[in-house]
Image 1 (cartoon, helix red, strand yellow):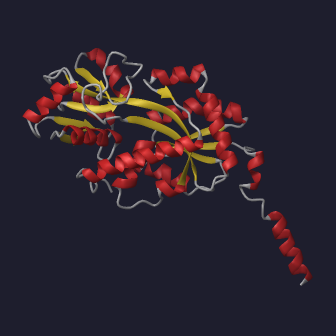
Image 2: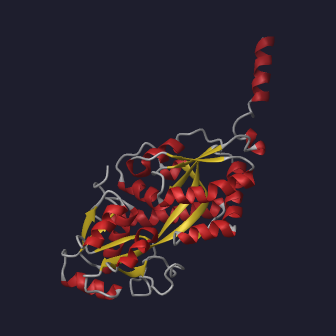
Length: 325
């Protein structure tokens, strides 16, 4: 009995030595920031923009690890299943995560239940671009053309269920147009075929489109965000051109597994916010046509909720729910 009491006492004393108990000393070892896509993409760039500066503020190394596969699902699941101690986090594309939450019939994790927001990293506008052979110089001219040729115009995307695909579906739903969707294996092949005239249009990120403007083979008709993009200040938004209610941005954010100590989440968020205020980081984001937009954990969770609500509605109104499994 005496030994049992000693064991219980020892357990009671050592019990608080959980991840939460170490939060006051967090971080005392390197942090792993998982990017669920290959190196070189926008999510990867966002992660690397922040990682070094976060490490400076947290006085620990932040290691970026690319864990690609299944449209981001492999890396997201790995982080969702990681020990929630603040040492494994996800730099994710919120639109893609929210779309997959509604689009996929089966997932081995729950975006809603298994993640907590830490901070938004960057917000990147997308743009509607057409091949210059398309006889439309404004969004309204394009809408009129599409309505005069139902099902004849084609819109490429980075693949079924991608953010680009769903941005196109939202455009069709709001404008009441019938445009053929052509899925590709990534933005690169889609933009290549846009340049070649094999497809008529895309909605894609500025880094995918802006380098191609000099070719004279594409024309950007509008940007998708609520405000004009600093990189294209003379290009009107879709909303300014009459597509009311259309506001789409590619948002990259840092997420932690549910159960991560609040103190660790708060420290990471503050490091993100301090990093986002640096001119060097803001300049790096601007080169992508993006904007550094770090947020508090509560604000990040609110952004996540809005993304989930928006894309669930788009998915459920479209015929694409079974297109990606």
